[in-house]
Length: 252
Image (tube, rainbow, N blue to C red):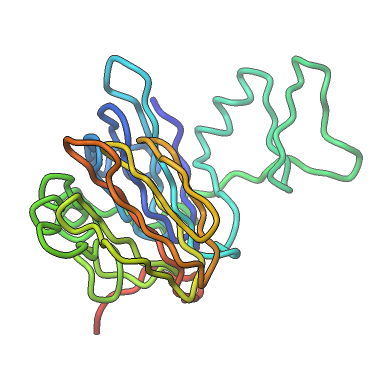
């Protein structure tokens, strides 16, 4: 069973980069299951327990996006995860630090183990079914490729395919929708290639990014990102918005 942990006030987009990944929902991982393929993105609702498992046959990678400098809080672990960790000599402190008793570590004086959630507390966490999650929180790579045939596709945002205001917006850009001119943003941004190699130019420098790379761009920096080789090319661009952390936003 994969580890399961909710982030009650985190705002998180989950980007699938390499190999299939199964995402399990609910405290026991039985509320629902979604399999993500390369390039898919999952905007996980706030407060939902989730666990991950690489269901491919090779190395896998996920990229997590948190909303701003303050994503809203720490990790709350499902009770069975803490119990399973203890069976391997791992003790989680109330401060969120992990101690390995098999390596001679122990809790400092005055620090208690992390308290387990009670059954009543667990009932307060949502357990959405797959039918609720897929239409509103998952965007598939090939759908985004089609949507980005002329202009970048708005994936996550107030007016995006996945409507939310998590402190950032996510755009999907392909060779067909890459801008030829220099551009800039009034908030910090990040580039994350999914397919192909991308050349990024800015005044005084240039760099080439490959799938799995990330590049942080300061606010107001003029830059241009374009495929540097022939073939399929796609990337995600994350731009901050300043929206505060909190519950998943839904349109009125």
